[in-house]
Image (cartoon, rainbow, N blue to C red):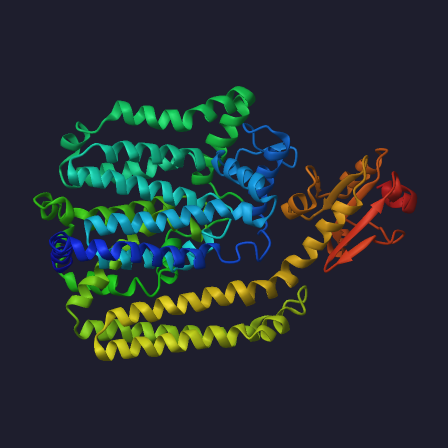
Length: 577
């Protein structure tokens, strides 16, 4: 198998020429760190938090920080058991150091992304050689999944880091026969359990178990692993919070966290996030383009598929078995996520480190044996980049949202479509030149450069334009809420669920009403009601507030200050229904 031979030769080369390799290590680390700063830290607070998951997470952390209760997560005066506590703790530490804001919310994800890239490079360098390691690290970095999650305050990047770093440590111990990696794996998986839950143990357990069964080494390897110390490390890291939160909340925590947000999310569609069984087979190749192109070519070239047989792998060394491990890693995670009822594109992130290694090895093998397939693959990349560039130019014509009338003109004024299209066209030209000269390194550099330009344009130009149109009115309302709410007032919304109001308005409790009767009941109380809603919601609920002028209007949103009994006084007949 060509790929395996190249894996072995890379390891032998890096071993036999260790001095040059060691000299290049600091330079490579500095280069990767600079890329990570650009991809994950550059203008991290340039745009506001996204409704709803990011702002929910940030608001839970904010309420933990101001209340001093670091055990029970709370959102909008409701116990919030969607996720474990580690990310909230890290965000709370960020609030302490940098103040409440986007930087502190997103910093943990940026750090996890950087650690994941460096861990991927280090593992690849020791197992496969310097060039494959660099390919894998940059391919893992330069894709929309990693870029988006590394700049968003959610748990997914943390989970991807803990699982990947844990599996790297496990495989290092498996390959070397030393036990330190097993213990480091346990510590990392304990962190995963504390940031996402049982899935941080389930997925690695399936990957390692099926891999060992496949190569016929389950009993031989499992009996050498330090299980007692490993379980003790996981328990010491993850168990204390689970015990404390159960003591504080009892069955409510066990039901909401383990049953609803783990079992039910797998078995049933939650929060209107469905998807067919092939959901990730569509999103993953598109998101990992162009790196995945030569992996498809490599699979086609192998032809006889003899490598699918367990016998093919059982007599091979640990280095030669690494493609199998990575392949099983990617396939198992993809199948697991595909069978789950609730789906989102970025859930595939824990599988991408393995995919990055598979693609990197395919590119390395192709670069050493350039042929017609190289020209074919790079020509396809150039064609796809050209189509993408044309898409950036024509998509603007399809933006026609009556609720955001200025969105199209604001995006057009930034010049973003032309910049994005130009980056794609230049990268396409670079790939054509690389195809002519049979230089995959050129194609890699051109594609990586195109990603840099695309992401830079998105951060510096596109997001600010979207900000004013999409998030601007809501942020304006949050600011008004913060200024207008007086002691004794009751802020609320009718048909508007926006955690941004809580976080940016710094208001702990904003009830979200869906029915007219709820508004009537609230107005029976002695406090003033500050009600945020939209005209469409008022019409849908047949709620007549024409006797009251909004105290503030922004976009589609209206903010009313209603005294007790306001609706009854203005519309007695309607209240008698």
